[in-house]
Image (cartoon, rainbow over all chains, first blue to last red; front, side, top):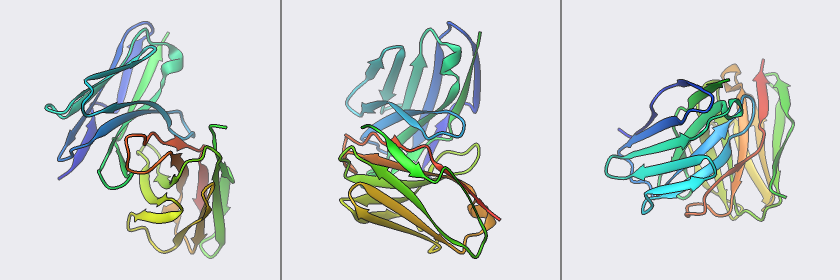
Length: 112
Length: 115
C-alpha cells in the first residue's frame, strides 16, 4: 500500500541546534516533494520544493535533500530558534494532476 | 497580492442548514483546491479545480458541493452536514495543477462546527 511517513510526531530541541526531520514514502514515484510549515489554527505555508533530479535545495537556514533510491527526504533547520516551533509537513505529488499527499507532520518545539 | 482569503473564519451550523464557504485569490493561479483538516491530522484533499473545471473529486459525499464561478473564486456549498464533518476547511491555489510549479498557497481556513 502507499504510505508517506514522517519520522516522529514530536521533536524537541535546544535553541541553536540543527533540527532534522525525516519523510519516508513507499509505493510512490513522485516527480517532486514539498515541505510546509503549519502553525496552530492556520493554513500551511510553503517552504521548499525539491524535484526528483535534485539532490539538495537550500533557502536561508533551511535545507532539504531528496533521495529517490532510499525514498526519503530530510529537512534541516540550522541554528534553530523558538520561532521555528511549528508543525512541519512533507507532501508529494501523486502524478494525478495536482493531487498532493501530506505526511502526518512533525511538531517541532525549540526551547530557549 | 500573494494571499488566499477565506470567509467566514468560523461557522457554526445545524445539520439541516445550508451554508457556503468562500475562497478568493488574485495571483492569477489557475488551480484551486479544497482540503479538510481534522485536529492533529494532515490536510486531506477534497476537490481540485483546474482552469475552472473540476478535475479531481476525492469521493467526497454529495452534501459538499464545490463551485468555481471564475478563476479567482472558489466556493464550497454545504448542506445536511453531520457532526463528524466539523473540521478546518482549507482553500489553496497554485499556478497550475500537475506541474513542477505546484507549490500551493493556502488560506487561513474556515473552522466549521456542525451541531
